[in-house]
Length: 92
Image (cartoon, rainbow, N blue to C red; front, side):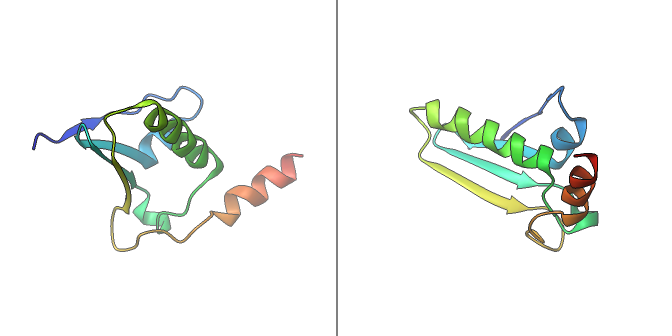
């Protein structure tokens, strides 16, 4: 199998590009990796947007059979980054 890492170049948020990695392991298997180990892979709003973008792209790919999620570092994910969402609430 030829593993090909697709670099994300999302202009909306460079942090989501750094913290979400798409690895196309084969035409039939893609892997989304949460890459924010210093925050236990807690997911921010831009990261959610990037995940949605990848899922939309995956839905259009007729060869794709399996899409897996993983987390880099010691933990899979702490869930939603509440600090990020609190900052968004203050801006409203």
